[in-house]
Each structure stands twice: as structure tokens, then as C-alpha cells.
Amino acid sequence: MNLYKHTVHYYETDKMGITHHSNYIRWMEEARVDFLKKIGWDYAKLEESGVISPVTEVSCKYKATTVFAENVVIEVSVEEFKGVKLRLKYEMKNEKGKVVCIAHSEHCFLDKNGRPMRLNKDLPEFYQTLMDLAQNSYREE
Image 1 (cartoon, rainbow, N blue to C red):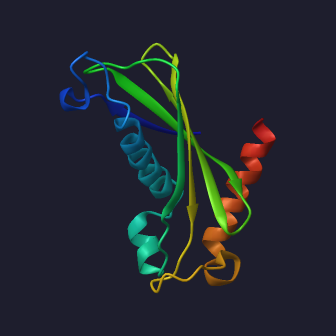
Image 2 (spheres, rainbow, N blue to C red):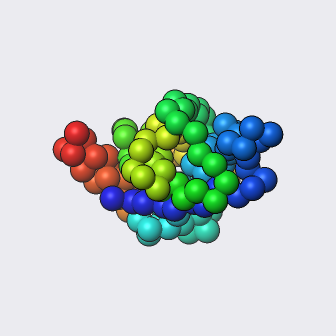
């Protein structure tokens, strides 16, 4: 289980005192960077290996609000990986364990020239790590 904790900053709230919806997307990126580091493939390592991984899609389903100084725990998991596209799931919970947001992001993998990569051939160790995580995620459901 890959957990990341974020504390809501004052500047992330709106005039009503709740977290502005756009911040959840930022938290997804924070959690994703942390997730990749924990699995041994931080962004620096990927970039050194010639991999660029742009976001191709994002979706969020907001379930409850969060407020200033509240801790939000974000669980990141590999929802789907078939070698070309990676789909991550984010489940965000408040301090009481209540789900506040369910989100997804999709990513592709490009080389430094912007051409699609075949990870199984270009970076087999990373490919296998993602495949293992995707299979474990599928088993847990």
C-alpha cells in the first residue's frame, strides 16, 4: 500500500474556507512522485533513462470537502498497465478515514524526442515493476 500524506495549506482554500477543487490534481502529482520514488523509479531516474511520462487524462470524483490544516492521506495504486498506458488510482481520505476524493490519472511513455516508448523493450525493469503492481492491484479487488 502506497500512502502519501498532505496537509491542507491555507492558500489552497477558497473564500468559503474549503479546499479549492483544483488542488486535488496537484496532490495527485505529489502522491504520484512519492509513489514512483517508493517503487524505486523516481522522476530523476526515469529522466536519466530517457523516459518522459506526460499526463494524458485526469478525472476526480469529489465525495466530501477538506479544510485548512486537515491531513489528507492519499493511497496510490496501479489500476491498469498494459505496457503502453499507465492508469493510476488515487483514494484520498481525511483524518477520520472518510473518502473525500476518488481520482485517476493516465500516462503514456515517450522518449526524449517525444516518440512513444515500448517499455518492455526500452526499459524492461520499469515495465516489470509496473506489471507486478498492476497484477497485485487486480488481485486485491
